[in-house]
Length: 149
Image 1 (cartoon, helix red, strand yellow):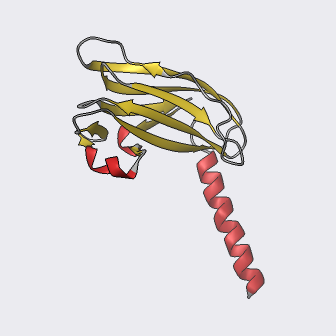
Image 2 (tube, rainbow, N blue to C red):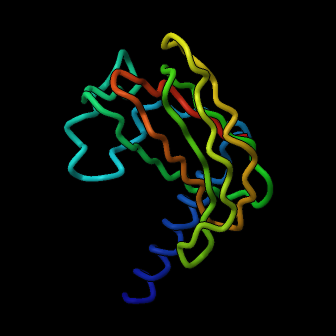
Image 3 (cartoon, rainbow, N blue to C red):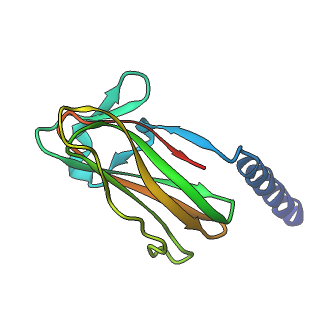
């Protein structure tokens, strides 16, 4: 019975891994996937429209999202953001949780708040690790989506 349970676990993991690995190369994610980087800021973020996340506090707050990756190599990243005083960066993590390939911080263009696409750079991903997006979202700012190629 124990051997059967072990086999079932291995098969179930294999199906999950195969499903995750068969996704298309270019992936588009909704902004609502982000969460508050600090637990005390959770109440600042609310759903905007169908799938964006909006900062409803009166000061800038930080949001973060981690996306597991199964394809080793370089992956261009971008964030669609509504603002004029916000920023984002990306990093990949290695097997022990350290930031291994940190990108430059990319800022929105100054002026009236508008929708902008920030090219957050190309990150190198090691096998079975993740890309982490971190954004400082100004008051009233919105993250509509982010993408990885």
